[in-house]
Length: 475
Image 1 (cartoon, rainbow, N blue to C red):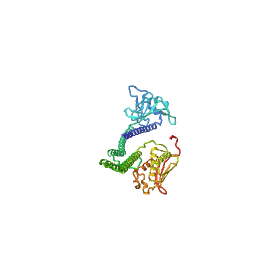
Image 2 (image 1 turned 90 degrees about the horizontal axis):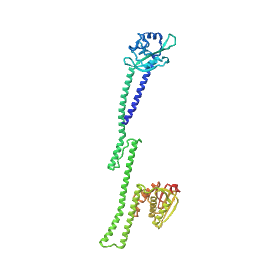
Image 3 (image 1 turned 45 degrees about the vertical axis):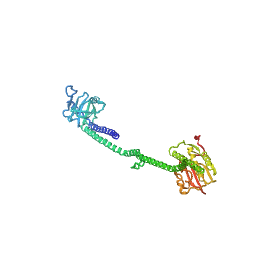
Image 4 (image 1 turned 60 degrees about the horizontal axis):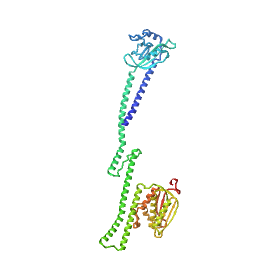
């Protein structure tokens, strides 16, 4: 409807403008013909002969127009002389008598001014005509200068029948063309709107399908490779559902892996607790050494279970929204705090540190936990009495141990969730520590890598963007 209304307005404006332009052009042509037909001055003898048989002033009781007695004044459609008092003399060859107006009388009265007028009029039969009234110009004879005859005017006119018929036909044609154009524009607008909104309908159906079935595998086909709004909307919806599907898959995988990892310590806890309970119920207590070992195993399993739950909470928090407000962190202080905790966990190890100032934007607690995880891995795999070398220089933190190292085929998997090296599965841990490290470092805009060190062992490298001095706004 909007398209049809807009086209109707435009077509109506063009049609009306066109009609008035054509009307003006036709009237200009008639005026030019009338002017051309009155350019030849009349002879004084002809004029006097006509005036001799015309009344000198109008008769209120009779027709004020008289015939010229057969004298032909002008070869034209309508020709007659008009006096200032309103009486007129009609040419013998004129097809009818023109009705005079006050404007025509004014031209005759002010003939000396030489000004004429064009106007629409009628004859005595009611036919519409185009009239030219000009002061009467006569010639005294061959070679004499034409002059204006006082208080007389010449009226010349042509019928408007053909002109009006042309304008009426044009109006009808424009009306028909406009109607067809508006209807065509409405139909075309409807077709274009339906074609343009078809992808939106598909998108609506897809959204309703996802809301109803939670099926994120649905895709909106993009029929063209253009960058219009509909295509971009379809691609955005496909990207959104793909991301949601991947997120759901990762979530399901996390739940499955977490369930698998939780099953082992829970089964072991259940077994140990059942043994303790059975010994109490049967009245046959376990030997003190066995009971002590069993309780130590329960304690270790509880510690492992608590560590696993803590790692899961940290990982899920990193996947969602970042808990703390990101701020400027003195990385050297965070490394020193992590080193203090690492020395407590590995008192038999020698840990060397060369830490230089470096300031980064990150979450303080998450960043410290990530560095602690890296140092815990180094402590866990270092031999007794071994050395761990830690260095922080221009935003690059390296932690190198002298343990057995990581096989080359296992390096691509070290940052996967719940992945543990076959040689490390007997050691405590959840397999989430390095995943937390990778996520925290990526959120801070850096990257982390693990590689085999020259001479044996593993070297962990963390690169974080920052500056050697704190920015002014960090105070």
